[in-house]
Image 1 (cartoon, one colour):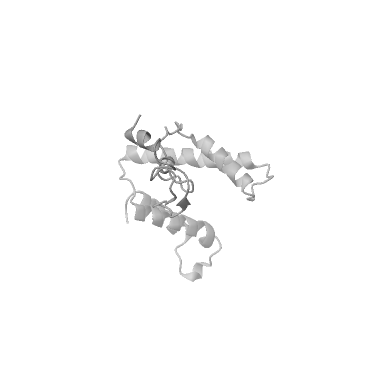
Image 2: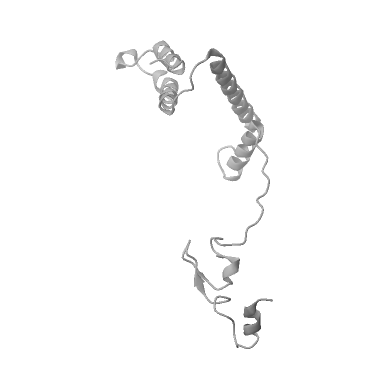
Length: 158
């Protein structure tokens, strides 16, 4: 029993701070509930709770969840019978990436910087989307030269 409980028996109404309206400092919403329960709008100041244990996602779980999210959101995957093919393609890419990373470690190659990874990704997209249809007279590298440049960048060369 706190000293305030003793006082509240003798005073009419509620004590200051118990049910007075207040404004949340985090979101600015007006509140009418007890301060100890925190903001009803944003949850700021609520009593703590134990966070649920989350297991690590496998690549297959990730791909399946992504497909489900796309289906629910009304994306083009809705009703497509080849969703399992998309999952398998994702997993094949995942495995290939793991193999390449392991191979790079065995060969003693340094990890690529963010700039180099960005340039390699842009070159690969350029190779797939532009160079396939480009006229050789447009002044671009040939497909073979671009592939050689990509492999050189991946090896850490310039």
